Length: 253
Image 1 (tube, rainbow, N blue to C red):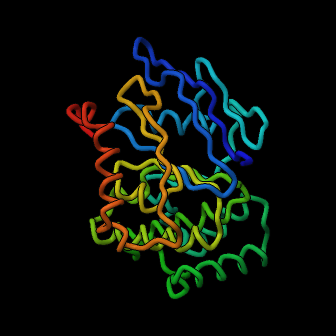
Image 2: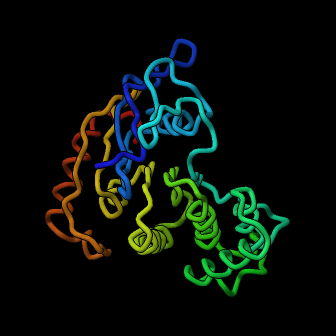
Image 3: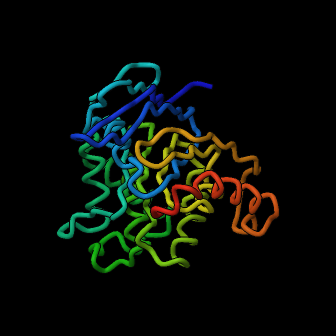
């Protein structure tokens, strides 16, 4: 499989604290991979290194086979909070992201309207972010990331701040949009269920200093839906991953 991302033996220390200890992983072209691990295990630090905001003490980052360690602007990033500009409309926020990516004028407006219609937000194009629910704001944030020309999308706990029901709806929505477009995705999540529903593979990280405990292949065929959660195979795999994390979970998962 061609790799959109390779993380090779990355280690990182802040002062006297070792955060990452030789982490290696890969995301294939069009593959959805999730990272799960205890709180404070270095998942966000790893994202910063992949995005070029931090440099590793050792190891390297490669994208499409090219060494890119320390280079910025190579990923589409969706943070925990939507981070929309409050003085711009929904359409204005999406158009700005396209303009930064080099798409100008009428084409940016056309793509914005087309994608807002695809995700069911065409009626909110002229609304401001404060007028939208948390789930709607995250949809706009995801569209911005999806329209980036960068082929790798890094999603950092994007639904963590949502209530349980909204989060479930957003997972189903993300799944349907991703299955129609198949971008390469690396997702950080604390939810084992979310990782199993969305992913092709799950990378399980240890407590700090983080290393890879196991790569878990997710065997469930696509397309997937919420009924998967009640299947014995789903719950057996969930228990397996929880068992890997259980010692670290005593310190807060």
